[in-house]
Image 1 (cartoon, rainbow, N blue to C red):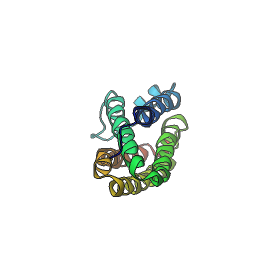
Image 2 (cartoon, helix red, strand yellow; image 1 turned 30 degrees about the vertical axis):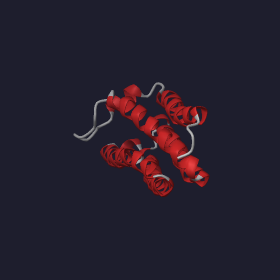
Image 3 (cartoon, rainbow, N blue to C red; image 1 turned 180 degrees about the vertical axis):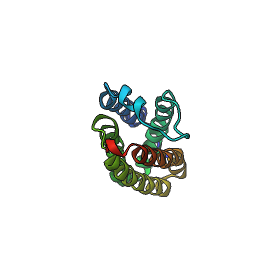
Image 4 (cartoon, rainbow, N blue to C red; image 1 turned 90 degrees about the vertical axis):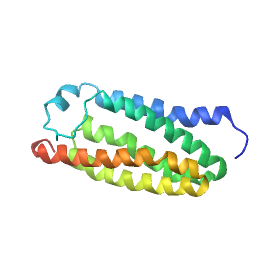
Length: 156
């Protein structure tokens, strides 16, 4: 691997961490009560789990992005697509209450994450491996999104 570029590494990590936190705060503003009133499946984690998990996943994603981009700059395209879809999902699900649309979108996002993971792995095995927990969490979130949407069809 090339010499560590601290500024690029920091930017790669800060974009998803700060971006995800900011988007989450904006998209979730004044939606907590609505979310609490939704019927949820038994496997729905408590609310405090989400920011903890996402901070870790965004950090790993940023490190993976840095590692892959050092070796293969073209990995930016699938990465940027999945990150854009990631940020959009919070608005669809929370802000706009479009749970069915959010389900379709998260399925597309999982496809983009899979593509990104593959491309990252081709560039750097560690980068690809760092994306696996993120893909697994989004697969779980896909099931959770579908379950909430199904249990609350009146809100779609």
